[in-house]
Length: 217
Ligand SMILES: NC(=O)c1ccc[n+]([C@@H]2O[C@H](COP(=O)([O-])OP(=O)(O)OC[C@H]3O[C@@H](n4cnc5c(N)ncnc54)[C@H](OP(=O)(O)O)[C@@H]3O)[C@@H](O)[C@H]2O)c1
Image 1 (cartoon, rainbow, N blue to C red):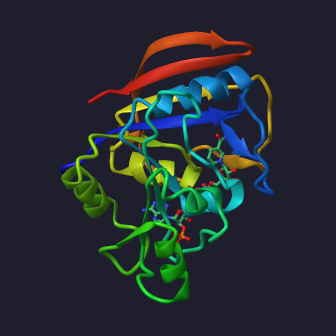
Image 2: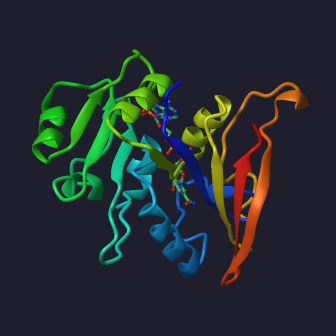
């Protein structure tokens, strides 16, 4: 499949969680890690999040660094659940926002379009079809893509071995088994199919650890 180079960014607790059960996640990692994470964005053509992250976190997904480019901000949002008052929508005329969705008409569609959001028709009738979405991004010149959560989105890409690099920011705290997973179910039934990565870098960011991994092909 034609696709951009894909990096998964994880900002987790020691036990690999990204939010409490109720969705609260501010803040798990330190301010140093978050600053590094914002710099990382400028190296990518686009950032992608799932609809739950868009709804629960209301992120900006910008670098907020003078002179740095902001990537295109993309959401997989089958039912167009994102709020018309969200940070992404309200800033779409400054920094592009593309939403893959099954909803391509109606009031919400019109309102988001008026704000400058580009809504791209999903090629399947259920959740966003990864293969055709990645193909389309390639055709539009997106060569590198940063996945910024949440766990359901991450597992979709890992299932099809479409994560090339992991940038993992890990904070020294524990959220517990009832919290939200950084990577949700993969449905593995044999160790032959586990997803294997090589660690190529490790460093400290304040009290956090930052590790970089590459997929073993
Ligand atoms: N610690 C951190 O840095 C961090 C970063 C990001 C998020 N989070 C936390 O993560 C939580 C949300 O994560 P989540 O795992 O619940 O959800 P998510 O991955 O943000 O969103 C998943 C949703 O995206 C939509 N989607 C559409 N097509 C998809 C596809 N092909 N693959 C995957 N998803 C697709 C689906 O909803 P529809 O059917 O509605 O389209 C799906 O349920 C929030 O609590 C947030 O705070 C934390």
